[in-house]
Length: 385
Image 1 (cartoon, rainbow, N blue to C red):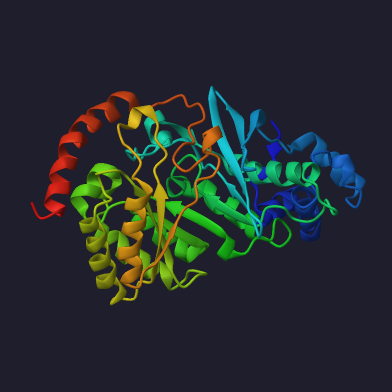
Image 2 (image 1 turned 180 degrees about the vertical axis):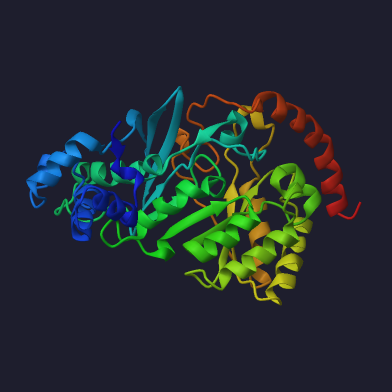
């Protein structure tokens, strides 16, 4: 059985080369060939000793999941579907901007968290991706785009930002995520700045603390509600890690973070979490934690509807009014521009094709019935009824 070298960060590759009787600098050469030059054939690696190339050809490979399809949006967004085996297909999205290129990467085949507004969560969960399957999304996209974009120098880096916001909860796959992040950051690999690599989480407190110690990159937290009753409905993980506990972890993380703020994501749901009272509750919540050292930025996300959710997108005037309340209180607030929705590549729409092992259909249907009644109570209470 051969070893997929995309599963290794540089230190892992050093250990592998030592097992083959090779020195550290050989691992660095090999790492550069794989990630910077996109090589898949060891015979291409002409500065490696012939003896090492022969060893690698019998014991190792550079294997990327097969591309099932590629879809291009009218706004330039590109979505790839990758076959990761056993009936599971994951999605990866490239979002071009004038000043940057962002790649949205998946960490799991499906997701077990089950957020009400997320298409991936409604599909259920199959398995964690390997480090190689996470890294291969960046490897493939970077080298594909270098060859296919109209650029003068095809060696110039195309992808400047990575967001772990695709399918899955990254911190539930921590053991595979950590080496992947190190590959992204390594100057011999992709050389991305810690400020430009973002891990998004629904709120696994213990793993937030571990990430702060092991590899502090930019952090985005899926908040979506100003109080626990509502967040319990929208993000079931809140029942295990309520908002106060989550925000305390965010405050601890900020001490190690490459940015001087934590980003909070807030999906705008019509009649559910978008009322003025919800905005005022958010202001009070953040002011309380600001006094304890937390600095924040809010990213308001227009909901991208899908049939199984039973939810609707907030009207833009409602989103603007909500944002104004936050900004008037001194909270930095942006409204995410919807990209790639014509190819189902927008936030919350990534679903791929997952062999669910968690009976998500029945579970989400039962939770949705409870949610529909519960939300009405939450909103009325929020409005002072």
